[in-house]
Amino acid sequence: MAFIIILLVFQSASFSLSSENFGNKEWLLMFYVATDNKMYPNAKNYVEKLTAAYSDKLNMIVFIDGNRDNDTSLYYVGKNSLVDLGWEEPEANSGSPATLEKFCKFCIENYPAEHISLIIISVGPGWQGVCPDYRNGYRDFPLISIPSLATVLKNITQNGHKKLEIVSIVACLQAMIEIAYELSPYAKYLVAMETDNAFLQIWPDIEVIKRINKSEDFVRNIVQSFQPRIYHPTDLLIAKFFDSLPFKKLNIVTINTTLSAINLSGIEKIVNEIDELSPLLIEDKNAVKIAREKSLEYGKWSPKYKIFYPIYDYLSLEIYAYDCNIDLYNFLKLLKHESQSEKIKNLCIQIMNDLNTTVLERKTVPSDKSVGLSIYFPEEKFLYNQFILLGKIPYPYEELSFSKNTKWDEFLKEYLGIIKLLTE
Image 1 (cartoon, rainbow, N blue to C red):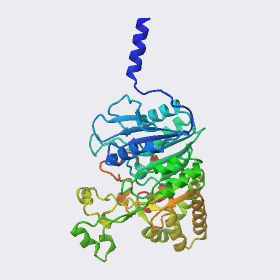
Image 2 (cartoon, rainbow, N blue to C red):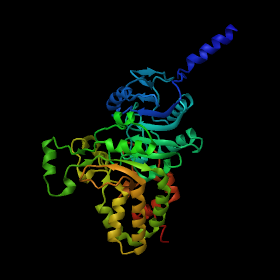
Image 3 (cartoon, rainbow, N blue to C red):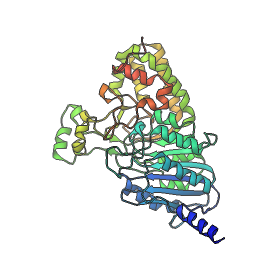
Image 4 (spheres, rainbow, N blue to C red):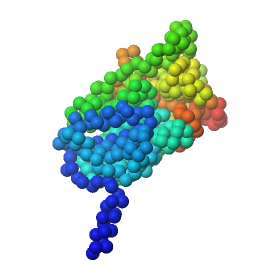
């Protein structure tokens, strides 16, 4: 008997995640704060304020990994304080899908709820992944691929039989059709931004969490409460000089932050229409070229040439800016105007109408015409499958479900001169 007691004590000590149940509630919000990166100070401050959103109808569980050694923690958000639940690894790899899955399963098993949502707070290079863990430097770091993120959602939702209500990704460039499509079998709504998160803003607002009710109302309120801002750094004299030049490509980069709420049930129809449109675009390259040149672009917080990384924070010129993501609606609107093909025009109109109903809510500065979902469309051959961050790209564009199930990637490669398939 004594041996059994000792064994039970040892097993309990070896896995320190608390299974204490704070009661079944209507909502469970799982905050995965993967901030072994520059987001940590803002995220830490946000997590400390979450106690103000405590209510009897929701449980909030927070995993947080900071940018110091041995600072991984797991908390239950109580009424007046953060209750430390303990995490078995003092320094977890928050860029691993296994860590995210373990966290989500712990939350769902111990805090069952009618409505379950996942809020990821980190940084991320769009379709190229999310949650980079920089504990060992800025090259060859782990991050969660978008297909891996989808696999985690599949595993925690029992193969999609019970979808998550909301996936909110607080990181750069995550409101992409490619990402929305990858996650659509496992969640009802996506909240994310097309743009770079240049001010490291975090949502949902605390006051919005306090008013949590129906899922659609919640995602709309998240976006409505967001404060879009204009990022245009011109503090240095040399930057002001370049900004004064008449040639736009030599001006300083401007980023208008924007946020959108997407009804993922409408994504598959849009993806099927893009698949139908893709082969037609090769037949109208001139119209495509003009539309692409005029399209709203995102990703400009990073340089397209790796050599400029050391100076880009101080002198971010348009000519050197990564600009491979474009607003899908804006591109289609321009293409419809430029193309002489009735079939292309009709498909553009159809997709634009579907985007208007699928993007439930968006928030931009008044001058910004972003509609809420972007798509990958590099203008130059060398930028195809180039990593936004330092180091080698962790996986190619072709690994996405969007690429596998549409001809968009084949269109891109033929348009850029990488392959010649569609018209053969």
